[in-house]
Length: 566
Image (cartoon, rainbow, N blue to C red):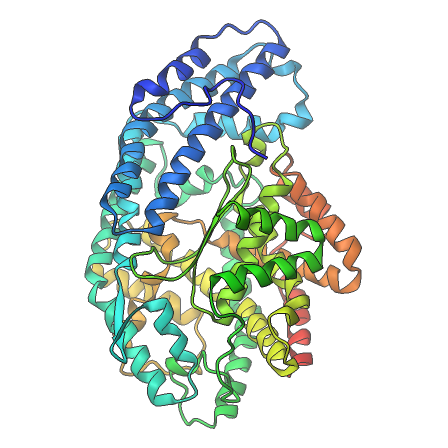
């Protein structure tokens, strides 16, 4: 499974710059006399990048698994402060060497077109003065995980993470839900100034990096840096508007029905997660072990090979699934380009959302395995619009087999309904978070009060008018602070919305013809990023389209599927 190295020593350990420098110098100084030698050089460059990516990946994984371990944080910070600046400087030199090589035109243009396009973009954006800024940013951005990971509340004499406490928001006792909601919100609000200060520091650094690269603002810079070759900033704005017009009416209808079923005069924010029929919270599994064992069964039902992929991860301990104090929040699938086995990180506490997250991250894992044989790291480094298509499609496809988790038909229907409501409700949140960031970085000198006004204005555009936040206005105004992406991976979020539309289309195909839909899905994922995004979507037999008309068509399909579950 692990890729054999041909260039980097098998026993190398990075303890200083001197450990990696000879390889970088070799790549920089090597003479290239033919197209064949260019490909050999590019393969060695790719191997070096894969080695470095995985080395940093393990430092990040270990740090997020234990945010209270100072040694692990130091190991990560050493890499981003000492190794990455060196690598960044050499990367620019190597990119230029590739693009300026006289044998480049002899390579298969169709095969290497996207990879070359990405390299050219990197050269366009590189500025030596940004190396230090990006190093500072990487260290600063990780402060969010440490701040959030330390957040706990005491309930029933037990200290618990906010994720675990959140399970009580599904309790049928409204008094309990209210108490838990207020505990969680107060704990978050205790650090709201700290998180506001952190974001302000990040905005200053990011704006400077954008100016250094010749951009007026960081939004425009990131649109280029994220290699969004296939759609424009105006398309993002069209997405915002389409979601507001086509999704919000359905969301309002869902909350109206919820309010009627609960027979409440006022629907409060702590009433949005409980089952509308006041059934006990769904409990699909008890712990991480049961979660992965049942996930393997589900994936095997879809295709046996998918189950084998998850089993390989389990057997090799490439999983950390349970929530605990001191662990960073959230979940991720980290591709490891040398091991060729991805790592899944989660904060599972036994609820339905955790099941969905496992299916989501499992979809990423399947993608990693399916694209593992691509020859260059450039082909494996996926745009999020494609990566998230894999994961979100897997959520929906896997729901056809959730009877593995739910033997009770009524609970199974509830789980599917909850998930589909989430598919709908996440789109306005994505649009709000993206639009919020547009406005922050177009006005980088704003103060805290102006930031609050920006968020309140945007949030109200994409919020249901059915839920009443009276008495909790301060919590409403800081709701954006729970979104990790704003702090750690700015502007990487609308991709989830674009991919969610694609995933609905993949699922619609699966409902019509499962075998063909899976074949198309697999063929699309195996492409990695070797062709443009619209071509990948076309291979999956879906459209790369987020117009108002297309969103309306897909949302009507989801609404019809929801109606079948009522």
